[in-house]
Length: 268
Image (tube, rainbow, N blue to C red; front, side):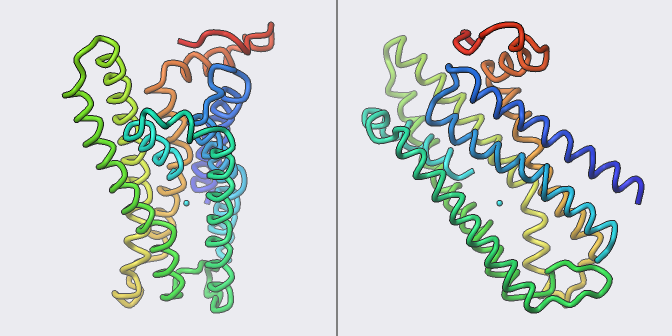
């Protein structure tokens, strides 16, 4: 129990601190005030809530035994529709996309919980894992369908980016192609980390009813924690691949932003 609480608290603290760095960086530095970064900000807020609320609740529940889709759409539009990107993807569109994402997520999440609670029986552990309809519908809505859409969009991004690389002839276009390749690579890694963290849990949730619930509850709990760890890993991906985030993180961690006004500083 002590080991479990230590691991849970550590993951929660790292998740909160990492995403706080992302949130402060985007809010404080004007260079990061871009539509794409606003979507990253929305994701960081969601991950922060996971670390501050969900992980602690899940840890207490386990001890006592009683869902990046918007940023992908942006990359798609920026690569596949470069001439109309800045006119059609503006601040108002970003706000609408963020509100829709949070609203749909909240409705689907609470809907699945309410449906599951009506059929939940506490047999040592109060987890909604034995509701076949809830498990199936929840998995399709919150994981399988979004993953299929994201993979299709990413494939289109990759094909268009490759075509632009082959078609580029000037130095400016070659530089743009390098930036697009880096953005595409980073997006692939973000998606890869997401799939690595969440796929095992949703597969176990889907096939558990088919195997007469033979998957042990401790294993499902472990896979849940693997999924939640995705919220901790996202800031590490941003910091590793984006130089401006690394520069912002260093200035925040060192306390430099408290010694003057650096909101307009040029981040590397």
